[in-house]
Image (tube, rainbow, N blue to C red; front, side):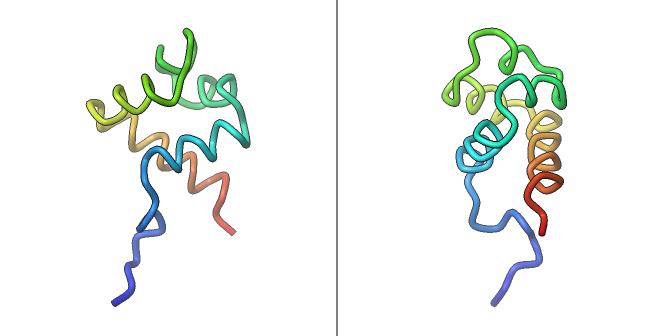
Length: 70
């Protein structure tokens, strides 16, 4: 059975790592205005924040789709 979800099988960590590699923390901070991307950003602290903050996670997932959609 295939999923229609384009993010199926991707972890939040994988999404975040791919975005940091492609656009950097500065790019992430520009696109998603949250403190965890601006002040001493790290994957670990960002994951903690995004898991607790559905609106921010949704923005990060949307940004990933914009950046990596074929």
